[in-house]
Image (cartoon, rainbow, N blue to C red; front, top):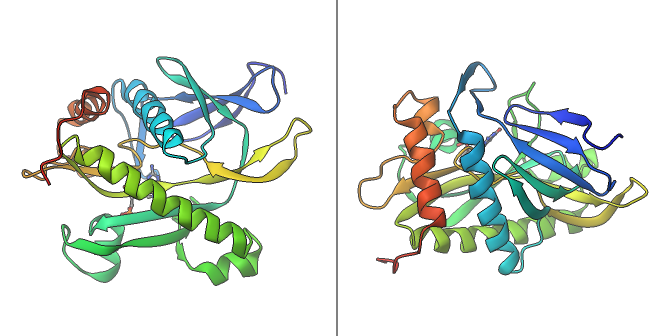
Length: 248
Ligand code: 5GP
């Protein structure tokens, strides 16, 4: 791969090669999709907000002992990250019912979940990221039992850290999606080290304002609620702003 070469383009991000085979540039676009890309649009400056929010959250998590692919923020829309071979799984953790879980079980949104609910999904756009369990993953050889235990433990650690972070900013962390990958070595082969990858942003988590339950995430786009750009800017402002004492 040549430095600067685009080697992957997804719905919301582009990956570019660098001179170092172990590092890539993750660039955030303004493109937005929902419902398995059936709904498409643009959220102005979303890429800037998500890059800055993700950079801040990765740095925060690293400080709390979570290993991630984040190296540093490069500019408005891009960050330098470790090259990963993505494990074809999406983890969802839910603290409050919403979205997919409310639909799956025919229950209302907004019910507190104690303990939080952990879900594995198979990462496949064609199949709509179906809900799966450990046995599917082991039988398909997507990850080992040890790797699953590691990802699960890291995910709960991330949930606790992010819940506390957003609570100080008067936001409830309703749910979020994580992706993990194997760190690629200089020879181009995946190592045994699994770290958090992708992004953590209002595209990948639900955030509700304390008290009002105002949605400050991609549901504003998915559900045509209006003030989409304002929601992303508001989350960025709260992430970068000084935390206030948690009210509860
Ligand atoms: P749900 O399963 O309720 O649709 O999603 C749960 C949480 O994970 C939400 O915060 C949602 O934004 C995030 N999530 C789940 N799947 C995806 C996905 O394929 N792409 C993105 N960007 N976020 C997802």
